[in-house]
Length: 411
Image (cartoon, rainbow, N blue to C red; front, side, top):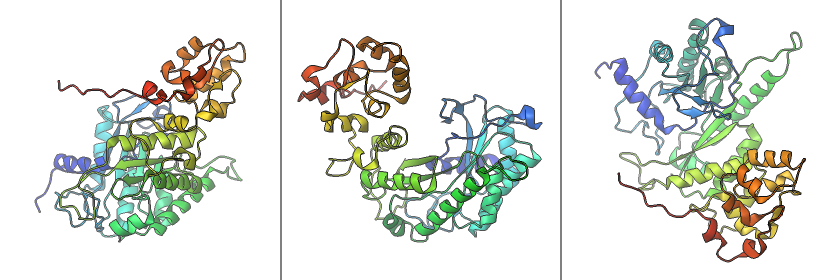
């Protein structure tokens, strides 16, 4: 095999990493090079690749250590039987690339994943060594996210948590049946055990020590996971049920959904075309409803016989249209839980409504200044001087407030 330059490796391994969606940097604790005496910070603005919860744009060098892999997962472009161009970085190359890119202000952090070479421990050991050298030798204070390997030893995972801001373990597919059929060499129970151990370790390190009363720094951004959507026939209801279980059992920061993308020389067990990207978007919206809006997983799709989210409208509006008996709500009296269920209201708008109504009663024009679309909100609320009357129960309400189809321009 010809020797590849670092530039050639970067082209191959950055392209191979594009299928991993779980690279957001939310939840990382602050590091500041002025205090550490090194270089890098998790607090600055940069070229965008991902966004923190407060809206900060975080640019990351997103690469694989290698796209060689001993596993033959049907849905993976880097599976062992795939006819793709292969490459492998050394530890030195990843460290040098990260530091060079940072000094040129291209990135603010590193997202490092990998195919499994020889053994899980050997691969994980090299990834940990990259993070260790960046932190200790280069005094790098930027963000580091490591994609961990479930079968790796507990000692390596613990070392990874000392140097990384976030760790993640992919569950691969929404169901055990799907994993066993499309990735038979991987064991769902092993993945879950690894996630449970990581949760325990994060909770253990979060407790103040008896001697110093300080908390040890261990993966302050927590753990996340990713599942592929559309590689099998799993409906959205089952996907959301899996996500709810993962959030509850392992205290995940995020579950990422990655729409299946057809790959060359694919197995006949895989679909011939990718699912609509809007499906992935609707799953993220439904996930948001579970995490921040108080919705139970079951009620988001209650009444949908096929267990699929509607693609034409967002899941909160779909729920409201199926539950019109709960509306209209008086915005000057309704509690926070019910206000969050009004289509068109975000968490920030609800907080501002609750704060403002302590001093005066809100009118419809006040609501128009607090939300993005008063037309979407109007049929579901009562305000000072405003009542929707029979509009809430109108047969054509959906057509009135649903987004209109838009012709895409060619130029």
